[in-house]
Structure formats: C-alpha cells, structure tokens
Image 1 (cartoon, one colour):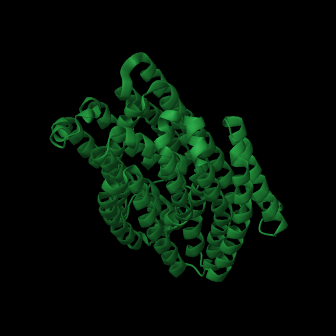
Image 2 (cartoon, rainbow, N blue to C red):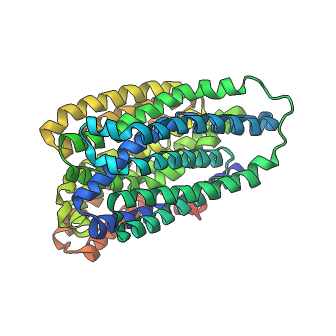
Image 3 (tube, rainbow, N blue to C red):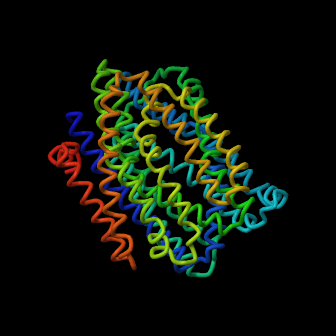
Length: 489
C-alpha cells in the first residue's frame, strides 16, 4: 500500500478509535463526578490510580517500546527474528510485572500505612491486578503499532474504554465504592488484553516462521534498548503521577479531584494530536531506514503544522470558556477546578506538539537523549511542585507541569531537528499566522460569554469560535479543505 494512503488510513482508524475511547472516558468522568461519587471519593479513586499507574509503568519498564522497535526493524530485514523478539520481550515483561504486582499485594498495606495514606489500603489487592492488566495492555497496543496495524490498536482501545465504562458503573452501583470502580478498570483492561492477544497471535505472530538459528544477542539488545526507555518511563512516573500524589498529600483528596478534571480535559483535547503521533512514528523510522530522510521530515513537519494551526486557537478558547464549562458540565461542587483547567490550557499546546514528536524519537533511535531530558524535566517538576503547591494549592501543581513540560517539548523538537532536515522558518511562519487567527477568534468567543447560561449556549459559543477559526484559516490560505479531506476522509 502507498505510504500516503497507509498513513491516511491509519490516522482515520486511530482517530475514530481514540474518539470513541475518549467519549467513553468522558461518559465515565461525568458519571463518576455527577452521579456515583462525591468530590472526595473521586479524588480518592484518582489518587489510587496515580499510585498504581506509576507502579504499572515500573512493571513494564521500557520493554513494550523496545520490543516494538526491534519488531519494526526485523520485519524489514530478517522476518524470522520477529517471533523471537516477541517471545523474549514478553517473558521479560511477565517477570517484572509479577515482581511489582506481587510486591504490591504482599507489602502494599504496610507501605501505605507508614506513608500516611490509609485510604489506599482497601484497594491494594485490586491494585495488583490493575498493575498486571495495565502492563499487558501497554505491551499489546505497542506491538500493534510496531506491525503498522494501528487499526487493531484502536479496536483494542475501544473495547477497553467502553467496557471500562460499563464495568465501573456496574460495580459502583452495586455498592463497592472506590474499590469497585478500580475493579471496573481492571475488567475493562483485561477484556482488551484478551481480545488483543488472540488477534496478535492469529494475524501476526503465527504468520512468521521463526529462525531456527536466532541471533543470540537479541535478548541483550532488547534489554539494552529498554534501559533509556525505562529511564523515560520512570521519569513519566514522576512527571505524570507524582504531582497528583503530592496534591493529595499536601492539600486533600477533593483537590486531587479538581486536578484530575484539569488533566482529563487536556487529555480529551490532545486526542487528535495523539492519534497523529501514534500513526506517523513508525513511518519516520521506516522512511529513514530506506534513505528517505527528506520524506520523513515532510511527514513530521506537515503533522506539526496542522497541530499548531489547530491547537493554538483551541487553547485560547478553552481558557475563555473554562469557568462556565466546569460549572455546567461537572457541577458547582467542582468550581475549584476552573483555574486548574485554564492553566492546563497552556499545557495542551505543548503536550500536542510533544504527542507528534516524542514517539518518533524512540523509533529514530534517540530514546537515550529523550530519556535524559525527560529525567531532568521530571525532577524539576517535583521540585517546583514542592515549592508551588504550598503557595498556590492545586493550581501550583498545574503551573509546575506547564513550565517543566514546555522545556521538555522544546528539547524534543530540537532533538528531532538533529535527525531530520526540518525548516524552522516555515514553522515560525505557521505559528505567527495561527496566533493572528486566534486573536480574532478569541474576541468572538469573549463577546458570547455573557450569554452562556447552560450547556446548550456553551456549545453554541464553542461552535461559533470553531466556525470563526475555520473561515479565517481557509480564507487566509492556512488550511486546505481538500488536503484535510484526503487525510481523514
């Protein structure tokens, strides 16, 4: 299949799947905040998810991406090695997952009590299952990406997301509270892993004839390349989980709920960029391995151009409508989340840029460089959190995230510029044009805010802003509707 058609097909599939998954997450978020849990219980659930999610990242180390890298490499050069890469990487993954999940089940109660978070104790048994399910889910979806079959990765994500919504609602409705909600997460992940594992075996693994004389160094290479990826993922623990934990420890569980809403909104808005980055990353490595660095650069730069055009206005719009959005969507009990959502608006832009950049660095063999930058950023984030949370409360945690993640994203763009022949002047021009369009759109949205009195009028203000952006972008020659249609249609 032609590369452009394959990328277009992959973007369509993963975007559609991510859209369904994010809608399921949004439904779950609304159900938990407005119906099933109090703000404090919602904070307790997300505090537990942050702690256990961090442990799950440690359980996988860098093995999923390391395996994906060598699957991609050997599929082109020596297909008979692909089954050996999968078997050995899966064996390593199961060993570390059993180690971390088992340790959580055996010693988690005592550790949680000693660290002054007894609210974790009732859920740690389920938490061990959550760690295992999360690790296997990450591995499964990463292999689908390596086989350039993001469609199946999207299908597995949809199955997990929709079933999680159903299972969480069921177990909380039955009266199991926070522990029931966590078990709903486990059940959804497990179902996705089961179906994904069957598909991987039948459609991919079984189609390769294993080499009878495999490269003896493959295990060492998988583990060696997982080292910088492990550093990156460990930094992810600090960056994406510790801030939530610190909010719970230094403020309270209700503040964790406010902070989680800010993150959830940013994740939802970042979904299109995540879909683009997930799809193009293997193609960058594939094109460079064929000697087509210029084509790889065009793929990345075109993607980044669309991200800037879409996300600069989106960020401005979100900052403007954050207060009425939180009040009318989540309820007055979550009014304290409004300033957090506004600060996270700035995070959304740099996060979107990073979504189309960071995975590509791993596939281009620059995992070590990214790991160094990520580690420095994560440590700086912890320091800033410790300084700003006592001064600014939950908003301080959001400010710390924006500052440190911005530096991380700019560093990643610089590193990929070292690998691919990008044209920075062109990107600066796109940035300036996007800012100009955003200024006009923001005035239009700001003028509508006094008329926002509920969800329908809020949607109307958002649609008016989006329409203004589209008209100005097309009239100014920044957006070609035909090109967009070819990409997603």
